[in-house]
Image 1: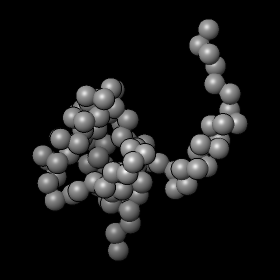
Image 2 (image 1 turned 135 degrees about the horizontal axis):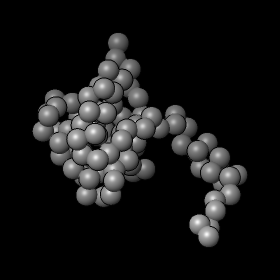
Image 3 (image 1 turned 180 degrees about the vertical axis):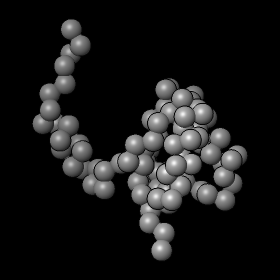
Length: 85
């Protein structure tokens, strides 16, 4: 049985994030990624190495997304962010 994982595709910028999807569809036309409104994608766990390889080709990286996105938002609200000064 195939296991699905939730991932985030972190691009160098918006252009490269879109380039990842174009390249993924070109190299793996039978492997559709389901992207949700939060920008996370569902993929088969056995695709992970291929996802990382395409990401490297398009100045992106693949990060496993949390199973519970609300928990990430909650954790981020607890950790103050610096103003950069």
